[in-house]
Length: 366
Image (cartoon, rainbow, N blue to C red; front, top):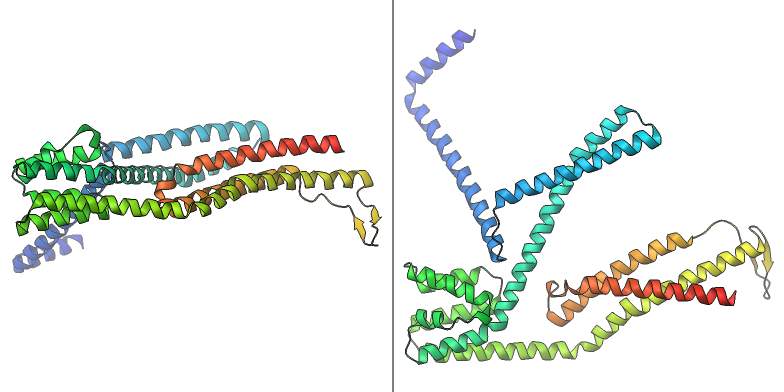
């Protein structure tokens, strides 16, 4: 039967050679398309990482994350085997099934978490570089305008305006200068530089510069006006930020001042109620002055449970408070990332200090 199929296949190939050529072409085109898609995806990842100024090989980074996940899983596996076998005497079948779950789910979760953290770090670094560029852009444009007014060409004026204090912008302009020396059009090199960062100020400045070059006007005066416009825009933003200082103070006080103290007082109140319950017995009815009976029974909320609840609540509240303050002051969330650990640490410190003070006062009173 197999021989009959092979003979029939050869005969059909001999009868329809054109069809075979078309099939080969389609397969070749599909392979080339897959290669192009893979290359484009890798290039996008490289460009994304380069925006943050990281010189990292994507393949080496993947291997590193893979090895780290393996090491962590091996450590967890060894600890679980020792813990369950010594303390609980669990069978090897249960241990093996637990290891399978660990290596299937935890391993994938570790890899996913490491990549997420890496891309968050890259995104924050890129944002920091964008902010640094916008800070020094007006001074750079004014120096470039002075060089142009002195008789330099635009590309030479950009190159000679580079100063070490410009930091990231100086390195990017050096890249633009190298590309123009290699034969790339100045307009194309500047547009490529602006597209690397999600900055409306930078893109608008580059767009106006390119339009001025095409129109053939006085580029020096144009750059001076762009620099003045950027400085005026920053002044307006600073003024708006100063006008909302009251809201910032209120949110800060509520999240890292009032909330920890109130949680500490609530914990002290729980301790008072527990002491009253232990003093009057677990099931004793007490008639109050207004005739309402009170019954102390059950365990209720323990101090340890409330402490966990208060800690988690303070961390979440501080996290979102820092994000709100960043949005109010800077207009975006990324600028307030550095506030989050400060808010969390201060709120927890105030909570534990207030809790200690409340406990000492209770001991003195009771």
